[in-house]
Length: 167
Image (cartoon, rainbow, N blue to C red; front, top):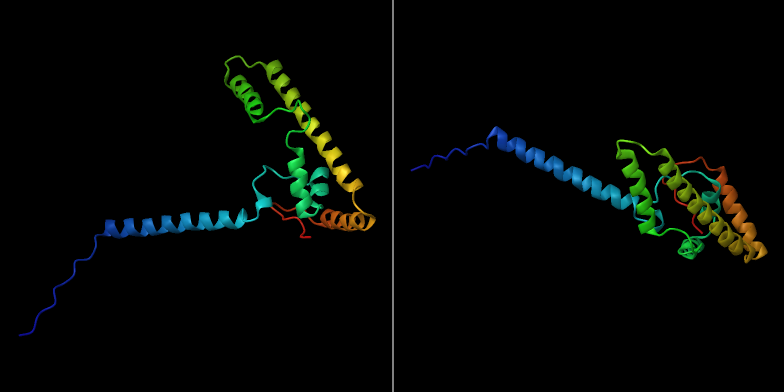
């Protein structure tokens, strides 16, 4: 006696769409994870906000990797009167409140902007002092190699998320 095969029930159209959508979403999430890990794989490439090809950026990028790390560490807590994270957040809160207020107080916002500009200038001056000290302590051959790396950086076309040259 031959057995007749039992026909399999096909999944409904809704179920097939749901499974396809689930697979697509899993692939999107996987792509985001892989992309983020690739983008942020180097500890020196943590997100630091918009990067511009400014004077300071080139000088710091030309330093050897170990010197860049030491440079950043040496800037923590410099200037004495520079605002910490809580103070910086409070400044932004003042601006946010002013922006949302029915009667916009431009003078209050200008005061906050002036305070932020003074802090930025303080950080810039401290960074210049630290940088100049590092360059002053270099040997003649180290300074020449540093100048070569700086020139290489200055000749490159600006690109987003470029890694500094390796030592």
